[in-house]
Image (cartoon, rainbow over all chains, first blue to last red; front, side, top):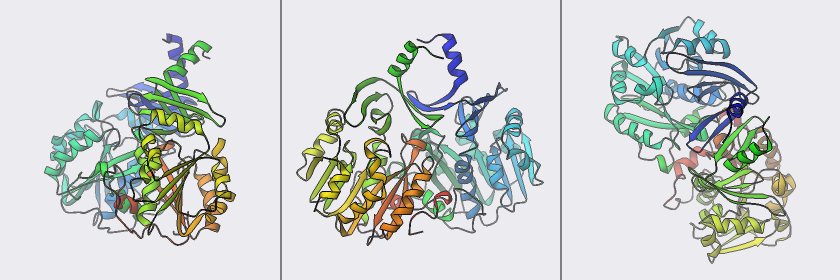
Length: 284
Length: 284
């Protein structure tokens, strides 16, 4: 019904992400800081009065200054408090650097960030204040490569691998398939842990169940857990903790100070699943 | 920038609720089922492809067919599994009947629903399938009255009182003040529990802290807990459990069958608070 001029005005005045075909979240634009298309995806950074800077890839919110801590703390710290001695860390995706920032709070030896899209790194270095110091840390190695190809070729072994992917569309699609997790398992030390974001428990339950089915055949411990993330669809998010030897609820150490969300009570609580998510994973 | 005609089209094609002044949730309208103004508030029922029927009061989402179970199960069942013998129940607000539906799963003697706005009852009877059978249950008494005046005048005592209010604006404003909770306490049996919705831990932290400060002076146990609610601001919600004698984590009985969200693991987990909510309540 609306004209091209009105559409342009709407595009300039707000950003919206559909969570279902008929509902979603909107953000009024204080400023459009960046909008471009890389070889892989559309990259946007907007500034919103409430959330600060927000990164969107192909129109989907990846992170915001105001609420990034929910997602990144809950992606990273559950593996660190339950692994006996995490030293060599791999991040697949995560070009915004939020996961890396949390990883570097720990006394690790080495963290390798494998991001497919150099332009995500470049844009986030400019607009998100935590990325550059994390990349300049002596323990950080940045590799621009396809995560799936990287793990197929590497002869390194890791203690913890984080799959900080975008949704199963665009360049991240292969990171949600069984084949990827089979290769991934070969890169893990015996006590290794992999943690992946797994979508919205409310909107993406079918894909969570599908993932659960093949993961159970690959890992002894397949433990889903959840956390609030205000800017993600439905406001809460699902992660999966994968290991043959490590159980997430056998806690090995205290988290670092200065976290806004995570603590050991939250760690325990996050693995308690509501009835509609029960029967997921091999531990329940 | 837009004309009146465009505004009318936007109003007819979608409903939006602002969560901050610059962000929020939108719902495409499949149909507008009801829009009217009562003596107290604007009452709307919309039909959305994904969420089904949604009730809005003064433009704020109260409940939807698809996600009501998160809020109503988590409002009601924590008190029921921890009270020694809940028989006489009071609900202040809750005219949509969702809380009543959960209460009536339990073998109680009597449940009194005190709703200020007869039109909310009338509209919800027409559009939400669970309300009418709950009102027709022999154990239910419906009182159309101001909840604050009702508890000031009643000489009845209750085992559990639920404050299922809308936000601290409009007719619910007084239900968020210290004076209301002082009167409320006089209506509770010695082992009584009051549970109130307390807002979004993300967006309404200041009002949660304010409420915490005066509640601690009135009740021995002031225990905040949280739950996801996809259609509420930020996607997760805060509740407060109030009692002098009952502690929420001393579980007395199993929940009823057939719940979609609540179970005893979730009960325990819900009372674990993230760092940014710590130091709330008298139990932490």
